[in-house]
Image (tube, rainbow, N blue to C red):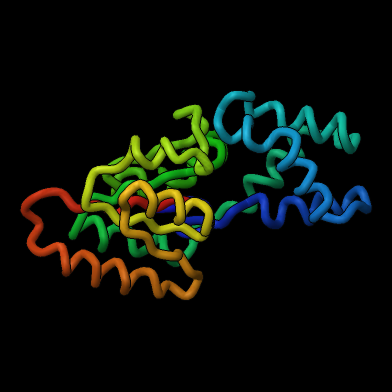
Length: 198
C-alpha cells in the first residue's frame, strides 16, 4: 500500500509550489528539472538525502537548508487512508511501500502507529530500487496480494507481476474494493496481503 499519496500526503506536491513562489519560478518547471536530474537516484537511495538540499542550493541559490528541510517535513500528514490500516490489518497482512526517502516518512509512520499496525514497511531508498522497476514487485510479491497506489505506472507494473491492483483514490473507494477482494480470498487460513505503494 502506498505511503505517500494513499496513507499520507505527498509532501513534495506543495513543496515545489513554495519553492517556486520563493524564487519566482513555475513549480512545474522545478519539478520537471528535479525529476530529470536527481529524483530517480535520490529515491532509490543511490544518492544521499543531502543531495536534494545541495541541488536546491546550487540550482536555485536556496542556501538555508534547515529551513527548507523543515518546510518539506511540515507538508507530511496522515490521510484518511491511514485510519483504515488497523481495520485492514485485522483481516490480512498489510505491507506499506514508500517510494521516497525513509528520512521523510519513518517518524510520521511511527507517530501514527502505522509502523506497528502494518506487517512490514519497505522504503525504496533502502532497497536501492524504485517503483518504476518491475523487479521490485516481483521481489515483494507473495500471491495472493492486492497492490494499492495512485501511480498508474506502478499499478501497471504490479499487475504485470501478478498482483491484483486497485487505484488509491482520495475518496477511499479503494477501501471497499479491498474489503471485497479480501472476502473473495476466503478465511484467513493462509496468506493474503495488501501491498500499499505510493
